[in-house]
Structures are given as C-alpha cells and as structure tokens.
Image 1 (tube, rainbow, N blue to C red):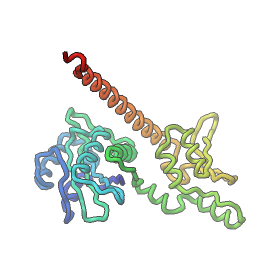
Image 2: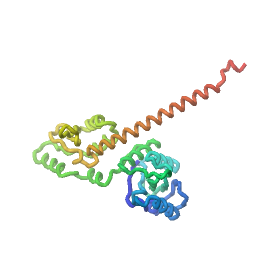
Image 3: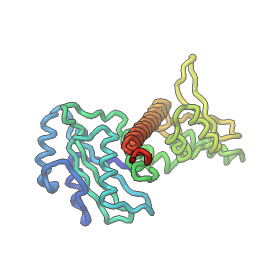
Image 4: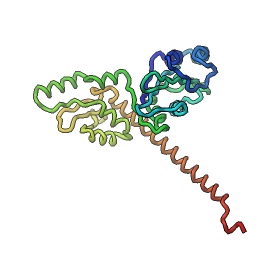
Length: 290
C-alpha cells in the first residue's frame, strides 16, 4: 500500500471529488459532498486561527498494491485503521476513492483538530503517516510500500551528493570498486529495524557495513560503506533520511508499531481465553443430565 502526502491540504476534499470516477468511501461530517463540507472545514479552521489551514487540514492518499483488489468495505476499514493509528479518530475527515487508475486509491482529508480541543501533532508527519499506512495495510493483510518525501525521491533517483558522484568517478578512473550505495537497500533495512544493531545486521545482508561517526566521544552521525570498499560515506550524504536523527526516529516508530501490535495480540488472546472459560462453564457434562 502506497502512502503519499499531498500539498494544498485545505483544498484536498474538493480536489479528491473532482475526479471523473470519484466515490465517497466514508466521512463523519454532515455534508454529502465537498461543496457542502467546505463550510465545515472553514469552521474547523476558525477554531484555530493561529494555525495555517494547510497545516491544520491534512490531505494524503493510500493506494492498493497491484494484484490486491479491495472492496468498498476493505477501503472503509483501511481508512478507519489509518486514522486510528495516527490518533485522529473523532476528528473531521472525508475519504474519497478514485478508480480511474490501474490501482485504485483513496484520498483522505482530515483535520488535526481533535474533539477535545487539542491539535494532533504534525511532528515527523511523514514517518507517522507511513507507520499508520503500515497499520492500515496490516489490517487487510497487505504489504506496505511508501512514497518518500520529495527530497528523498530525488535522492533515490539520482546520485545524492557530490561526494557520491566523486566516489563513482574515482572508482571508474582507478578501476576500483564503486563505493556508492543504493538508497533503496538502506531504506528497506530501515523500514524493519528495531534497533541500530538490527539495522546494521539487515544492511550487512545487502553487503553494506554500518558504524557510528564519533566525535569527542559523542555519536554525531552514521557511516556506511560497501563490503570490501575502503571509503565510508556519511548516511546523510546518501540521503537526508539516513541522518542519525531521522534513523533514530524511524527506529522508534518501528518499535512502537511492533509493541502496539504485540499488545493487541495479547489482549486478543486474553479475551479468547476468557470466552473459552465462559463457554466451558455453560457446557453441561453428559453425566450431569440425569
């Protein structure tokens, strides 16, 4: 499932409805269409005049992966689980499905203004959105793909820094091993990392070494290199999303997501056990019938 965050968020609901094959999946608002909901969005923003409407209202989309058709009920559940994972349940939202593309997708517009008056944090919003997309996909038994922010997409498509370009040129000139690193391999390892150690282990499986950059006894960044290469590259020189701070933030999100799922499974098992005990108490032994 592909997660993407869109610009012009305050106009997201109207944009989503403009498509030729647009279908409202679900909403908790009174308006039956975007025009009727526009006043509700304006009222929502008026409660928080200090916040830019394009920051208070969020517009994003989820796309299903190829070969995994979803019913309308599947989409409703995905949207609900996505919002729940974000902590946005109860906030105004509208979700519209588009079917004009090979892989249908849902545009979700929601407010960060919560019913109790608080504003949902937008700190690390891309990473939090990605984690929520993972939860939505997991609820449907789907794998998750993510669309990186604009700077990360450029990083994945082209050499990300002069240092990496120079590394490739030196390797070609000297006839030595290319020390540049494929960001996709790093991103794949980071998506499932629960610690820096597990991140390093997964990278090693892709032929990449990882070590901390230490200055004055303090870890200041991450260094990576191809196995067999002598040149270390700073993670942030490969892509900004591989800086120490962002890597640590993603690992913490991964850990929280896994812990949440483990707690949910534990509660489910406890409920199942209680239900089995309750049923057993109501089953009369055959010899007690006489």
